[in-house]
Image (cartoon, rainbow, N blue to C red):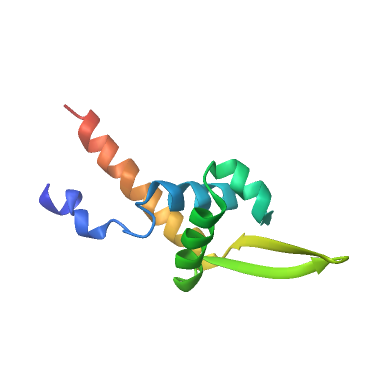
Length: 103
């Protein structure tokens, strides 16, 4: 059973509440603008920005900055690597939950 509960297999990047919420939100849409994501995740602009940067550095999300008219718009998208990382994370948590419920 020890290998089934190997905590070292858990993706530390996704094990953060805010980053996990960001990834789940992005997994539900093709893309989400920064302000919509801000409302979905319920955090501050600065906090969201910091966590998005960490996810972008890991290649889990893509950040696209553009202008609509004269207004800046930041678009966030989950990448293929991000989708795989999220799936792997969810599978790991599901595996842990099954073990916990097996008693």
